[in-house]
Length: 88
Image 1 (cartoon, rainbow, N blue to C red):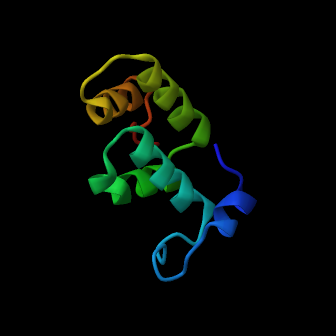
Image 2 (cartoon, rainbow, N blue to C red):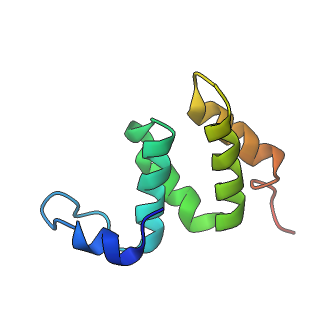
């Protein structure tokens, strides 16, 4: 995981114009690790709304597996961890 300082050193305002906050950088990191960069906006939203420890636990689970579709396994694990339950 990169620190905010490292991300800002590599920041190019013309190329990376959508990454201005830390949760956005983490969402892009998730998309890269899951090999699903076409849906990086989904992962940015998840990074904004779901607690970081839950996301990291699901990511660790996927990284340790040999799944062909890492994105689907990641979403399944988030569901198993109760990340999508509505708060009443």
